[in-house]
Length: 375
Ligand code: SF4
Ligand code: SF4
Image (cartoon, rainbow, N blue to C red; front, side):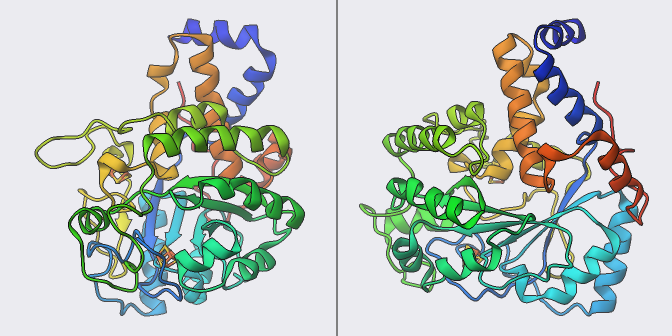
């Protein structure tokens, strides 16, 4: 395999540069996720957190002192890229500040309505659910403009448009707004929870996060939607290369029809989801507990999962499956490099020296430069 990779790299010096950069600085990443709160100021239709009980059934009562000790222990356990989610982590800024004492790099998933302190150094993925009108309907409040204003020009921020059946045709609208605001844009595919799917099929009690969906009209992407999503994203990649962060290889893969994972018939779980299979990955609930059987989006049905976290991770973890041809290997590099652009501020502009300095300046010492284990 090594000689084949060398052959591909020798044939394409630009590809070799990208490969060496990710090999040097982005391998050996040890990610774990942290639900920082069960509270959210929105109620999005089909929410991954509230439509199911695997995230909400834990008590939220830890003190700041307990958070401090917990994050210190997590760093000692080897986590070098934490992911902070919730419900809505911007509602608990103290917990973000405590985490930032221990890690310089990491990622916050937010709905964008509350501006996170500029002193916080983590990357920030801001979700938008379509153009302002659709976003307001699906999220239960007119928050699109607030989110854009909060993060316009912020180098930490990338907008993640949550693509669903109702907003496919708004991809260009969202891209235009992001471009005008100096915001970078990427995409996440709405992935239904088991509870949401069941309610859509069987009918279900109306709740804050199940107000609009029916069997005929819901958010789940069908094969024809996915084909259109693929084409519309491709258009925006070409039209707005400075704004859109997306991999063409990934665009083809994630929008192909059919489940993206191998599903165990008995349990319904994906047997090839790397998030479940990574030995040190954990998703901690608000009471710090975790289960080895859960990923970071525990309510989601694996058979319909197209979440960007799982999609990117799956491809990145499967280098061995991407060495059969130059195109496949180049696609793997493109996906990994795109992931880095989504997770490192200004990845494209960083030189090797700057990254070494950033890692050395990380007060914890378990920096990225030491975390290289690529073959
Ligand atoms: S999807 Fe996110 S922003 Fe929307 S209700 Fe759920 S946790 Fe809150
Ligand atoms: S991330 Fe993995 S385990 Fe979680 S829902 Fe998706 S496929 Fe299943």
